[in-house]
Image (cartoon, rainbow, N blue to C red; front, side):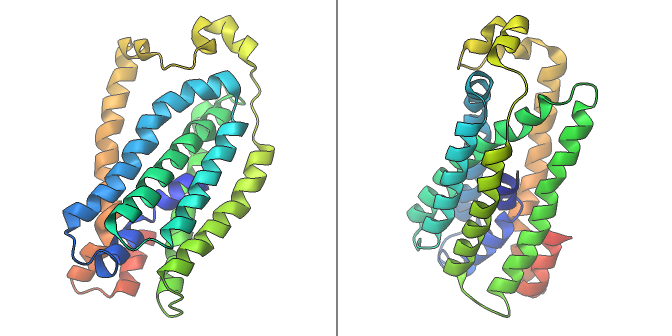
Length: 243
């Protein structure tokens, strides 16, 4: 979850830096497509990743996802043009996040039944915590120390790599494919089962979640730029994202 939501919750840092440096001639709307495409891929591709997780388990998905996330940051450090940032941050990062998102939540659900919601909620706090820490780290790297955007991305990449290796070693599932088959004959399929939307409660929860995400991620992407345009220093605007 650190690798996925660490990037999502620090998107405003990248947006602000893109606007003032590499993409200063582009509008806020054009830059916004970078983050829209990233989130689109994370959640859309995740629809397909879920059944693959059910069929084959988390380890290969987590390894591939972590590799793409780290590669995304390393290549982003070399990117200077709009299309390069789209390919590295949005496409590579989005695909990596999609491969990680379903296993991160699904593996937790395998070990909890009566308190599954509580366990998932506790695990989800990692995204908020790391978003705060990464924002403060980038404030330090891009502020007083000014190590530059390239090395800031590489440092994040090395941190992700250091967290990804033990995550891939320790993640596991408790329920085998055979056990899943006892409850659901479709568990052996790697294709999504859209019949689940026949459940009105699930369909309404999905619609609610969709609108909640819109309200959440727009401020996450623009809050630093919003602060700087209203007279707050860039360094202090980083704190808006953190707190």
